[in-house]
Image (cartoon, rainbow, N blue to C red; front, side):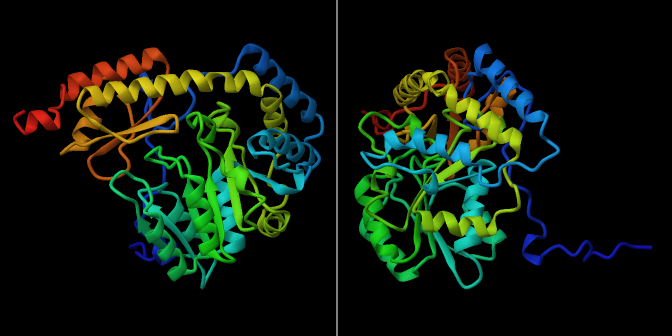
Length: 376
């Protein structure tokens, strides 16, 4: 008896599609998912364990559906970045990673007959959020330096009238940040549509680069998302969050699953916020390591995108997969993502960066500079 090729009855647009995910390989140097290379201290681990133990006795009861204490703590954490604005707990939404936060936004404000828009190259999950919520997908394109042509972007938003504009800042996979001017122009162009600034890597931005949180008071349609996965070194916690007008947050309550944030997740996230100075203490070290890496790659003759994140996009390679594989063969895992010819490497410890530099040099040598190629 032969199995019907149409079974199981998967949605037609999902047939043959591989699930999203970076490779998870057991190699000595893992620099492909932009995690922090620094784990929490013994003191933080003990506080997390105590917090989990405290809620464990009540696991027979559902968690606080509105994560009241966590909302207050997240609002207090965000307010110093808001340029004098006060972010209240009623402006905060949290979920299981910023991925679920984004999905909630598309569920509530996207859907059939509506469109989400972004500018490539950008985070590869965005079109998947649109697909999964039956939201139309429109894409513009960035400049050669991965910045936005602001007038061209404004025209596209005006023409498309998207329900949501999704823009990471710093952008993934390029690392480039958006100026305030661009955010303001796109908020105006979007009309009633939401402009979602995805600040998953915001804590790593260079000095003088402001957060979009500063503009929340000026644009009712602005949403700023964050995560505890990167700078807080809590990728395993799966806690993402956003700040927006209370009316937007109320819309998200409609689409969330019941009791979507477990008691354990809330307790662990609160413990992380209590230890924010320690956990964020590695950010300056990673920034410095990133800037040294950018300088070294450029000195070797590689093209490198300016980065305000904890990763660096570099190239260009005629066969980037061969370079990726050559690094993997030497025990260094980076990410094959972004535009053709480019690779992305997360910033790790000094020892990991030394291993990366050694492996890259062995894999490709020192690329010829443009001047050398022109015979000068």
